[in-house]
Amino acid sequence: MLKFNALQSAKVSEIKITKGQTEPIKEPIETVLIEILRKNPNSTYDNLAKQMDISRSTVKRTIKTLVENQQIERIGGRRYGYWKINV
Image (cartoon, rainbow, N blue to C red; front, side):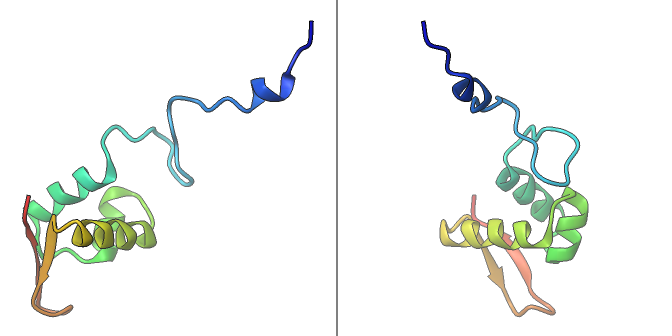
């Protein structure tokens, strides 16, 4: 009988922890981001990253996805604008 040790070590765990986090993610990032923007539509990338304890680039990438899916949109400019939730 053959044993495949490589396959045993290649198993993916069910709980995912991203780099820099100590606890598993309970909700999708998109859901949490939308809820924060609902409470404070004037939030910046840096504020969102700090509140969610994730990197600024992750926030920027997630917002880009939400905008492409038309779930949120930016009203106004970068300095005085706000996020409008379409969901």
